[in-house]
Amino acid sequence: MKKNKVKKSVNIQSRTILSALPRIVVKKKKRLGRGYGSGKGGHTTNRGQKGQKSRSKPYLLFSGRKTKKSLLRRIPLWRGKGKLKSSLKPVIITLSDLNKFRQGSVVDEQQLIKAGLINKLEMRRYGAKILSNGQLKKSLKIKVAISQTAKKAVEKAGGEIINNV
Image (cartoon, rainbow, N blue to C red; front, side):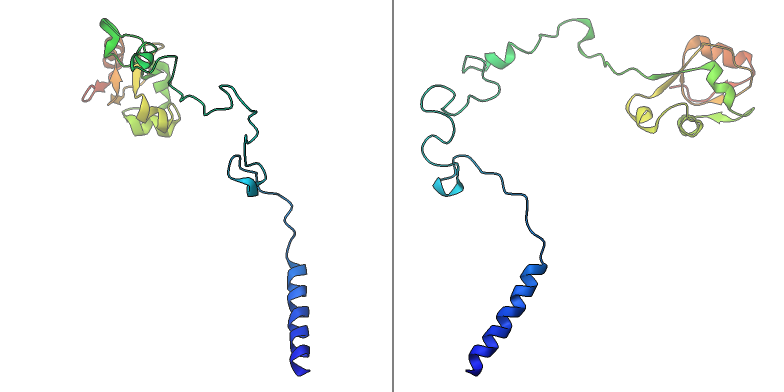
């Protein structure tokens, strides 16, 4: 009899622990075609009986032919001038934007990022180039790519270009 009482007390403790657990509300998704026990398995597995859609689907690049030409016909033939030319263009910074910097300061990539003229990600991906829109009123030392007319404007304001890219 003592053994039965011990089992009952263990059983009562396990019930209190189980009742304290949260209930699982979300049911698992039924996986198609994984046997009768999965709930959606077995013979046709929700695809109907016959036809192309009931069978396995053709692969993504298939376009009616099994040759490699089916992929090649969809890719344009790039011939001529712009074949190797990069489509990524640098971010444009104008001369009037450079008036934010102090007189005689060095303008490089890090300083442009700190001033908020360009994003760090954009700088890494596209780069930056100074163009001659606006007027420069301060003499600066520039270490960024610059156009010829902007270069003349910087030198006219009393600045200099260091290691032009």
